[in-house]
Image (cartoon, rainbow, N blue to C red; front, side, top):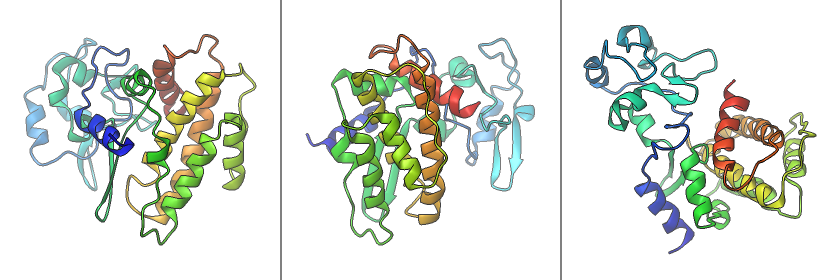
Length: 266
């Protein structure tokens, strides 16, 4: 199979591993409820969650301009996420989740007849799948789709190629990208990462860039807003991981997840 066929098969067949240390994704912030979802959640009203608290639907939901959603804390995290775990999923199972939460960590981008799919390495189970068969989707992530009138696919390719360059230290690659986009950059002076861990982290960050930079549409304004966010997040993740003494192939999936939660969300 081609890289494209492999990643599409992985996305289509992905099943959340509830046995992982986090039990659910951290990026699911709830989103706007679809018609009928509020009524569906009513049958869980008053029931105890796995942490001993009571699910109070009325108190946990807020109305926005776009519709109802579960409330978020000051960091933009759904209030049902506690210590990196979705209490709702852990108590009642995956099928009760909001549709956006059920889809995560799948990311799908549509542009005319072109469709791109990827799994987010924020989910530890996704990174484990990548590492199990040494799957590094560099060719898939650096494809350029025509027409590309705003040069967005090409620009994304160039960013990922900088991350891919194994002859440049990852901290230097991040510094180069920050300089290119006028972002203040200071990387950790912590423990130096081994080449193996750096190469894994390159791929994890590239997957994030690949998805984020076009996931909400083929739009220059969104692209230019998202690049600084991705770079800043990448530096925080890198710094977080550089402070871990025993970082290795067997635990990087969980530590990368914690890096995203602790370094970005908090």
